[in-house]
Length: 284
Image (cartoon, rainbow, N blue to C red; front, side, top):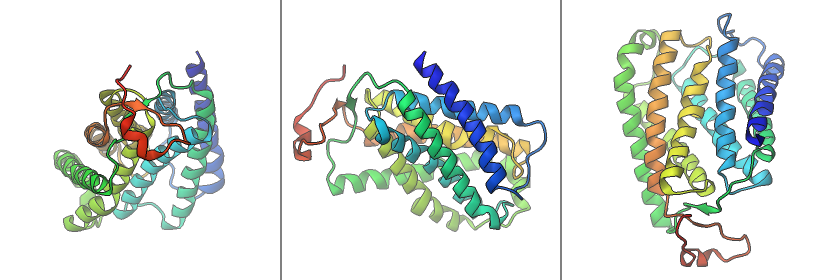
């Protein structure tokens, strides 16, 4: 019941905040086609549902839980917005600062509402990597970065026949520049968000991987594209929703398994981090 109440209150807050900040900050933004409020509401409900689910299985509490949720939710939005700018979608450049500020404010308030209302995690086991040496991190990040690029390109090839006509009218960057963007920025951001989720979610490696895939898929693909917008025709929007929803889910699951170790108890803040590997525990 508490989780349902958290979802409902946060959903109302999100819808209201978007109306207020949109009216104040995004005047001049091209409007989506009429009659799309129901899809906007559904998109918001889906986003809030995923945030509540994540909050319920996070070992963090208080402002730390809010900031972890915010890092994931806003990080995914920024990653998508920057790619939209990079691909030169018809977003008025003068509105970009306001658009980033709008998403920042709305997402921050949403996470501050969800974090204290969602029930606390029942388990205090996390899959934070046991080996946190610089070399281990570098290897994980490089593999995760290349994995993101491979899934991005594969999904792009599959969706291209459905979006070719739309992008043929735009001046998009050449393929080498697109690849560089994915490797040097977007893939690294996604790897960082996976690390945040692996370090804060409780449960087995498989459970953490599935939750990570769900978060990246819904918050970074399905929910944003579920609502109509002024920049994508519906056919292109639906195609991209399937593309990013699927590729982000696969990436989240595989990258989380790459980062995660067998579950261990959360270490008290005062305990020396050097003792972490010696405190092993079987998952409950």
